[in-house]
Image: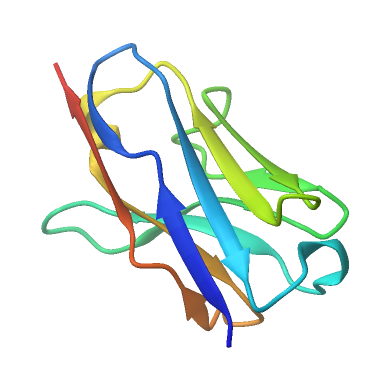
Length: 116
């Protein structure tokens, strides 16, 4: 059974940094075929893709976070990270980790709130 558990969210001020973690169980990142994603959903808005990383550590980012966010993976810890720098109030959202082809596996989310 695949489980993804996010952590690291919180309340910060604009310009601050946070690092989110996504701990995976039931799958081994070292040989997992599919990308691992970070999505976010702000109140009243649709869920949007933030970043994704392939099994070869190739990364893609939404235009809104390019240059500020970095996705990485530690296969030994079976964990994917999202380093978020220069946070803005518009980054406020629940952040979700997801995996799989669709992706079909989702975590419960972690709240990130950025005050101005």
